[in-house]
Amino acid sequence: MDYPEGNPVTLILQPGEQVEKTFLVVKERPWTYSWSWSSRSHFTGVEDDLSNAFSDPEFGPNEESIGKSSTKFKCSSKCEMWVRARMLGDPSEAMLFDQVRPQDIHQGSVGDCWLMSALSCLAGHPKKLKSLFESKQITEDGKYKIYLFDVVELKWTPVIIDEFLPCKTWNGCPKPIFAEPLGEEIWVALLEKAFAKFCGSYGNLSGGGCAWAFQVLTGEHKVISYAREKDGNWRLRRINRKRQMAKARSPRNAPWTWNRSTPKLDKEQLFTTLQTHIADQHVLACSCSGKSSGAEQALANGLYTFHVYSLLKVLSETCDDGTPVRLVQLRNPWGHKEWTGEWADQPGKDGSEGMKKWEENPELKQRLNPGNRNDGSFFMPFDAWSEIYTHVSLCPVGKAPIPEEEEAAEEEVVSDAGSSDQEAFLSESEAEDGPAPMPL
Image (tube, rainbow, N blue to C red; front, side, top):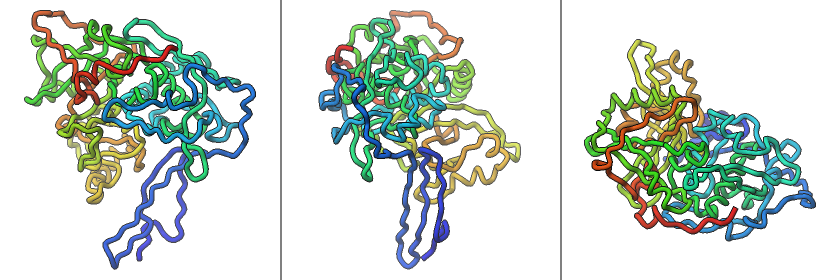
């Protein structure tokens, strides 16, 4: 037997950090035991005083609030108890916001990667996210007013929620079945609950569009996307406001329109365009379609089809030997499962070939600090990204708006079933219809 990490072994993790290590290798047989550990604050066993706890009469702790998925994406119904968010860690340390960072976001057992990725993108603009909460601190009674933008009515809508989250028992402790707080910071779980009430149930969040999430979170209804077509070039698309206003409140309400007269972008033009968008403080998310009609499908390179990733950086860099290299940085809202090809920071199933690029370029590694953690964030070559990914959605957050386009109604083409992310494969009925939202 061999112990790659030593025997005994001690690991020190940051709150919420997850790493994968091989602790034991049995050389006589082709067996390798790999254990994944994650650390976070656990339930302390302190009894919750519910005498002053607000319980929302319109979106209560019941099966109706959890609901069911009407798409091919999951929504867990294995709720054993409802626990206040402040009680999931040390209640004396619980807080609404600490440091707002992309690593705060960890998707749970509902297919809302479109929302989690949007939150990861906007984590770079903490004032924008905090402005959605009327109170910036944990309230005494656990009652919160969160403002979400209604893209049909074009107005901000207050959503009242309580702090109770659906949980299951894990290692004797309650664990949220949906978005999990990082340590004692609970804003992500509460914002997800506000979206669930906004749309009618947690199940109604299963399968949606990042573009719609951007609209609801920022109030910017003029979002755009780029879609890669069969010729390898990218077409600019915009939200069709007339069709969007005619539909119900739903995360799948993102009908796209494009103008045939607008030139498509080749790969080189797209690279420059994406860099400009990021420089203008536009937030971006991307996804890749697949051949299957199911939900997320794993690829051999560690990526997943029909899954939305935050697109955080688009970089022109130089290797230590002077060779130019173009990289993008992405984040998986699961908080793990990363790219394993060139410039990966985690080894794939076939070894660590991708990680060698960082070893060969220590100066570049020091500049970009890719880390060596399975935390969902990773770099990959832009050329590989542009061949794998098929859709990019983006939204302005800073002062620079998205350029307007001249209307050409005679050449306008409308797409209802296709969108920038998950709903690209949903049927037209799934894309347009959905359960009626609950009153707020």
